[in-house]
Amino acid sequence: MIKINLLPVRAAKKKESAVQQITIFCVSLLLVAAVVMCLYLVKRVQVSSAQDDIASANARIVELKKKIGKLEELKTLKDQVKKKLDVLVQLRKNKTGPAERLATLSNITPEQLWLTGYTENGGDVKLSGIAYTEDLIAIFMRSLEASADYTGVELVVSEQLDSGGTKLKKFELACKLKVSVAPQPETSPKK
Image (cartoon, rainbow, N blue to C red):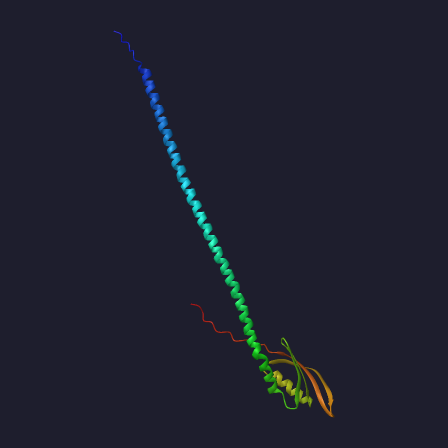
């Protein structure tokens, strides 16, 4: 007996396998799209986070630049104050210096020797005066050299002067001021 199958089984199986393949293809396409979309969102979040970090770093840089500007301003103010203090120290030193030097001159000037001029220019000093003898001028020069204020005493001019019948010696001396170094305060070594 011959059986005839009127139902198209092969066509149905083909149709069923095609639907199954299309379904698998669509599901896999959706899965790939979902994975790509997830990766895109993750990268988007990472980019957004990086941009936030960059913005906060730039804000921090601006803040630090302001602080650096303030530090530079403080450094310049410190330098200015230091210069002013140095000027004050120099003024205090010069305030007492000439008075002490003139007191020294007064103390070492022998009798019968008179100073008629005193010029101080920086570290150079010029003295002029009148004395009875050359010996008095020599004593005065030795006393100047031995003093704590003057060094390098030289006789520039010595000439005879007639004043009212009395013969006097007119002289000019050149010398230099001794540089006195102020003692520096001792600093203890850092631990």
